[in-house]
Amino acid sequence: MKKKSNNIVSFPSNLSTGEREVEAILFAAAEPLDVDTIESKVSKNINVKKILEKLKEFYSSRGINLVCISNKWSFRTAANLSNLMSQQKTVEKKLSKAAIETLSIIVYHQPVTRAEIEEIRGVAFGTNTLDILMELNWVKPQGRKDVPGKPIQYVTTEDFLSHFNIQKLSDLPTVDELGSAGLIDTTTIDASVFGTGKFYKEKQEENKENIYSNIDEMLNSTLKDTDN
Image (cartoon, rainbow, N blue to C red; front, side, top):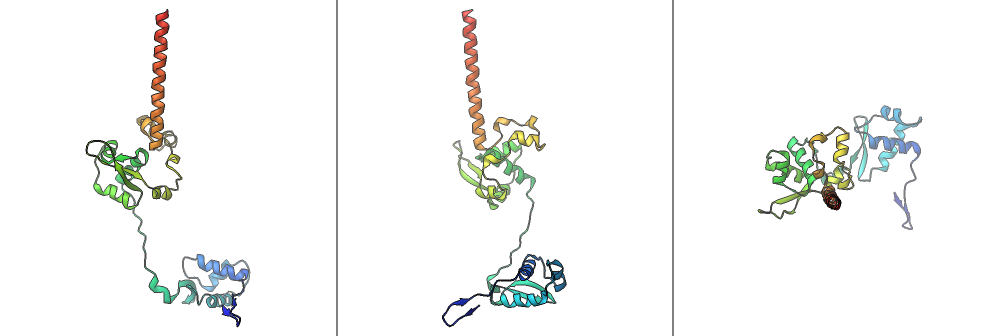
């Protein structure tokens, strides 16, 4: 990039199709590539060596440079910017069975207390189980339940929805859907208390309506018997 006498910046000309292909191949490569490998990937017969030298010059003053080490080419962070970089390693660890069960209970019964989680699971669990879920930012404390002792209630977070690509909690599969998929045994599940808080509330309202409906039917039947 050069400056003209009238201070107008002159940008390099657009890259050709072949140059763009070489650039894309190097950018996407998981490891440095030699010339022969690059030539085998481009769509037509082009002078790859000449293109590499041009790209090397083009990127020489940018944040990333095109470098050749042991006859293999790759993009690297500019040497004078290496102090800005820090090494990061991602270590994948599987959740324990207790953590998975605890997360599932919180997801479908929130807000829920620790005691309620243990009652549903039928077994006590270690303190670190909730700590792991909170470190992942999938679960967080939200208020206290209005009962003696005021225990903390737990709910899921927006990060939980984002990680599992869920728009909203009501998008989670219902008990019937999980049963149809063979993931749970619906004969041992009480559908009226299975689902998100919203789903649970809706079920409760439906149950109340059914109760009142039954009462009306009983009264009407009684009145008819009296008239007879």
